[in-house]
Length: 238
Image 1 (cartoon, rainbow, N blue to C red):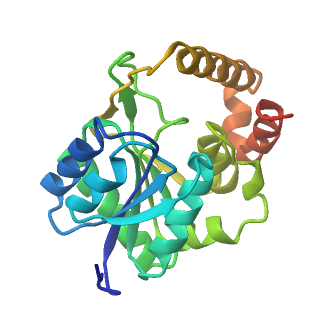
Image 2 (image 1 turned 135 degrees about the vertical axis):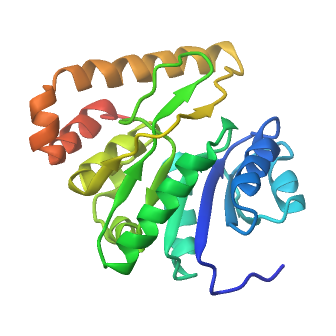
């Protein structure tokens, strides 16, 4: 399948064994923006995730093994930049709600930032179906200007971004360029697949919160680079 090299806006989805919801996420995106170009990075899935995405006219990048969200994200972002886009949205594969107002707000702001040559990361309010309180710090819905995406790919510290550390790493790299969006929440479906997945998720998120609590709100505002130390502590030895 060929794709136009003048694609204006791109949505990036990284997925591993998400056949249950990947189709719905793609449909939600197309509902709010029918012409958006979607790149789906298939991170070593053993189910029909890639087949479903291809059937729905996405550009699919297949990774032979599960390398983790961070590597999949960097792979997809690098591909997206080949299209010289004006805005890039990175979003999780298990979405149940993508508000049109929020989507258009993020795309428009990223486009304007690109036109002005400014690296900008817009972070959408993000919630899940288990916990409705929105979060920005660990949000899986982010809009990037082209300059921000180029900065990410050029970074020499990408090896620090592992697992849930991707969002924290993005804060450390682009914290001074971040903008919190205030529109309606983007919502993802949180559905544990097995006992080990539940336990691992709980442990990682608990440790993430513990380490974040060690950083005062004032430090978070004045020293976003300090998140690098959090990422190092969080994934030391992994």
